[in-house]
Length: 284
Image (cartoon, rainbow, N blue to C red; front, top):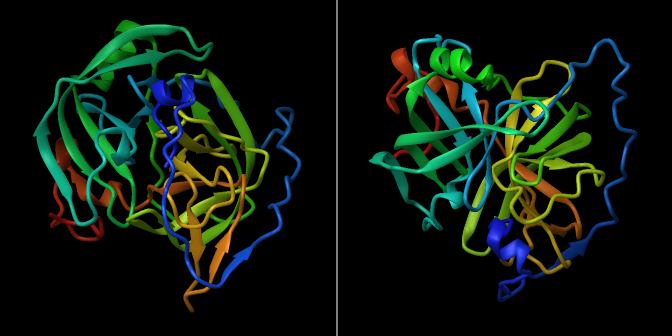
């Protein structure tokens, strides 16, 4: 996974150990032309609604069925909360974490506070969802910022996307290159991860950034890792494993955890319900 922001700033790398057998080193994923802002089918993606954590990125989000009076939520990575062991799932744990809310220009307009970590895991996926102490309506009224909507359907390859990093105040444009059956990094395994084309060159501190579909402005994934030096299946060097167990390494290529599964697990009032119909997130 991407190193935390502080580690990135001081260039402290943590080396992984071990390699997987029969590793194929893939040619770089080709960088496809970035979508042009003038294209009338694309929305203008900005930093509005992104947040900066102490060590990562994140975003103020809502689900398709959320309402303005619901408690607001922030989406980030599970590893931005803590390095949870495989099999660990955290639900509704009290938290007092601050988030710096940004507007479209990247200026900080507010400090939001978490009431709890509603859901967090690094099993099958790498996500954390925090419930805040305020509502979407109050944030919009006081600060003029609206949440991003998390799409509840699977994205498609070839989609023009933007990785929006709050701490770095950067918008990285590329395309969704494809999907990875299993993405392995150290002791963690993630299912059906998104792989970007090479134009999205993320760095430490970008973890937790929303991956935004440029055509709809919706969140389709949350950025979580990239292969930094070509090692195989080690920390900061994830490898791809296909249905037959074949391992492929793509140096310099970056990945995200999909988020379409999340909305079904939050019901009335933005409350987590892992027993809800259609909820497939890992359970404690």
